[in-house]
Image 1 (cartoon, helix red, strand yellow):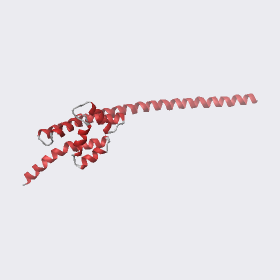
Image 2: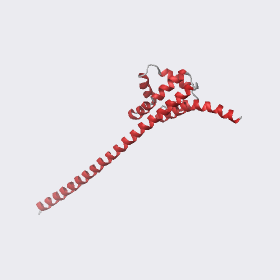
Image 3: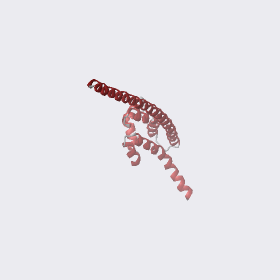
Image 4: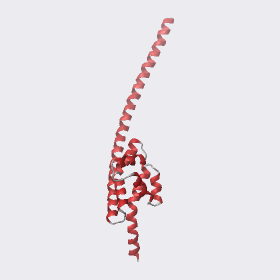
Length: 169
């Protein structure tokens, strides 16, 4: 009698562990599937980020070129701004991929280009209006993007303002 009750208890324990292992296998399968879906979404988001950054880089480079051709920025400012805009996508992606600050990513980019120095970048940024400097000193990708957008837009806006006042008179 005692032997049957012990065997019965062991059978119940065995059934419990079999059901438990099946449940864990099901959860593991669901987790793998969720990881695959998340990984695909992450890859899609990353490729979209690369495309957007590259497109923004092209727009910013065109703006800097246009401002320089119209003599709205000096040759010194042009060299630094052109360098920053040509490395825009690299800097932003470096920040997101390697969890770097903008300063660290910019240092990495400056090492590859002997024509621009970190001090040259600082000097050009010191000349900028406060709203650009404030975005720049955030030292984050979003601050960097705001600063680049304003940096490339500002000379062209300054040119169109006198044209608007002249057309109003």
